[in-house]
Each structure stands twice: as structure tokens, then as C-alpha cells.
Image 1 (cartoon, helix red, strand yellow):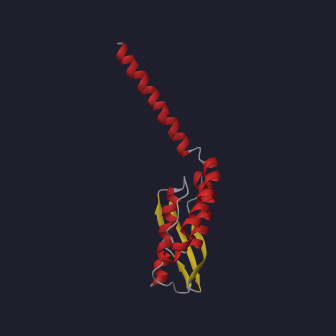
Image 2 (cartoon, one colour; image 1 turned 90 degrees about the horizontal axis):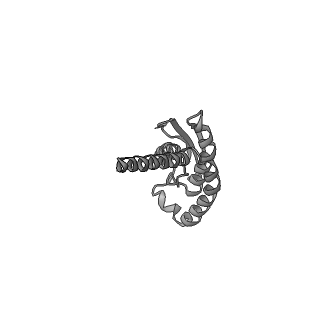
Image 3 (tube, one colour; image 1 turned 90 degrees about the vertical axis):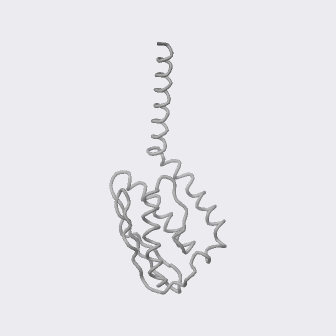
Length: 151
């Protein structure tokens, strides 16, 4: 009887720990994302600045290219890219998930993704913590636009 009670109490403690960890991972990310993203972005810009030419093997043709709308669990993400002087000069997010937590995540992540993609001249960018779905949609749509510009 005592052994069963001990197992039950340990199981409850483990379950509570998992629930608390899940909460902090999925719902309490705003402060951590705000403080760590700029540092991560600066580090990635510094470390990859010499390799940006290697990401685009084909030269981009001047023009405006719209990437395919890339489906995510929370809605589609679609970008438009402008190429001038054979370089990506502007990226505009045409469509992204809205409502609830998506607004907060996209408000933080999309400007970072856009800035880094412009600096790297590539869809091969670093992911912002807590914005996995947005990352997949943004990079998928941007890569489609880049592929169109290379054709």
C-alpha cells in the first residue's frame, strides 16, 4: 500500500513538472524572445556574412516575385520579393496568420525574418524561438519566390 502511494505521489509530481514546463515553453515566451532574439540575430549576421554569396548559386533576375502561400497550422504565409541589381531589395509579407497568439508572434518574428533574409540574400535564415510555424511559412514562400527569380 505504501509503495503504491509513493508511486502515485511521484507520478503526480512528474506530471505537475511537465505541465509547468509546457506552460513556460509555449505561453511564457515573450520576455525570453524579446531579450534573446537580437543577440541571436547579431551573432548569426556576424558569423554568416562571408557565406551569403554561396547561398544563391544562380543569379537573380530583376523584378517582383510572389512566393506561393505556404500553409502552416495557424494559416498561410505568403511573401513578395523585389529584386533590383540582381539582389533582393525588399520583402513584403502579404499574408500571415492573424488573431490570438499569432498576432504577438508575427509582430516580433516577421521583421526579424525579413531583415535577416535581406542581409543573407537567402531564405536560409535562423529561426526565432517560439515562431516555428511562422518560420516555416516565411522561408517556404520566400524560397519559392527566389526559385522564380532564378528561372
